[in-house]
Length: 49
Image (cartoon, rainbow, N blue to C red):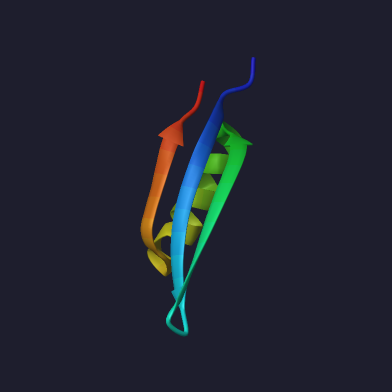
């Protein structure tokens, strides 16, 4: 059984905002979120089932 998460990240680069939506299982989502979130603004992780 796989659990998927949606990671919303708004990255502000040179006055431009890039939004990335990623979907991974728990083993990938959690470590990736913890690594990316401090480097971005408005980063949220949402359980997707």
